[in-house]
Amino acid sequence: MAKVLLLIITFTFGICYSVYADNEVNDTENLKIDQFNISLSFGIGQRDQFVVGQDDLKLYLAPSISYYGAHLFFDNGTLGYTFNEQAQWAFSVITELNPYAKYFNHNHISNSFLEFSEAVPSPDYEGVLDSASGDQVITPSDNEYLILTKKVTTELMRKKRISLDGGIQLNYFLGANQRIDFSLLHDVSDLHNGYRFDLNWNMGFQFALFGQQPWRAKLGLGLDYLDANSANYYFGFSDENLETSYIEPYYPGHIMIPAITLNLNRKLTKHLSLMLYIKHQNLNAKISKSPVITSDQINTSFIGLTYVF
Image: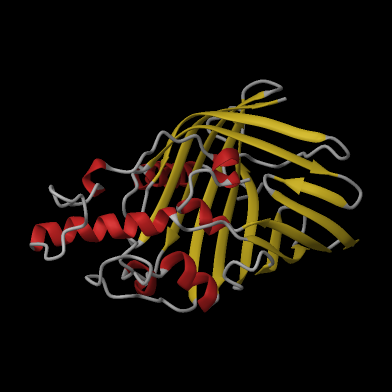
């Protein structure tokens, strides 16, 4: 679905083009200062699932809640305080729940802000039990081994907890329509004691078709780095706490995850807009080889309407 939408957008840009976040689905332009900014996107979309034992996330609602004061701000789950703000840059301290935990925990706050899901663990991953004792099969056949592998990894995924990360953020403004964001965060909840840094570039532009109301668009390129502690906790595998030895432990070590996003928005009325959102994240071999991972990419797409309150 995401690839088809991306082809349509590329064709549209070829017709007419003129210069004009991750909240991922909702556009955050024209934020009001010293008051809450609330919007709700409703439509249809999907985030492809890449974790064993889980189905694709169906997206129907995407609320956005933000507040920006003179120094204090809240932006869809990120709480921060800006110490210094100049014409070209701003320096802040921030805290947020680890965003990669949302792929393993449907109750993650990011899923509340960005996605409404009906996904449940697939019945194919229920596992094989001994009919007499109810214990796991000790000597599984090839087919039973595959099912048991899925069961064990699924059980481990349910044990993945959410870390609270805190750190610094630097925003650098390249004119009115471009921005570079850098953040460095550490696990302050003492869960895995890892750190990560995020680097993102965003550019806004607009284009019009046949003289109609112009479309506003935002293109983003991002790169996330997770150190070995963070990556091993969320993407690694260890069966030391399970009564099985059929699956080898796996630790990917430090990893990098690149991403590209595209957000389109066309105003219909004062409060209502048509919107389209696409995001692609690439998972390198160190991640995709993990027994808890089933794909080498994450695709998210959403199309619908956004109402700004």
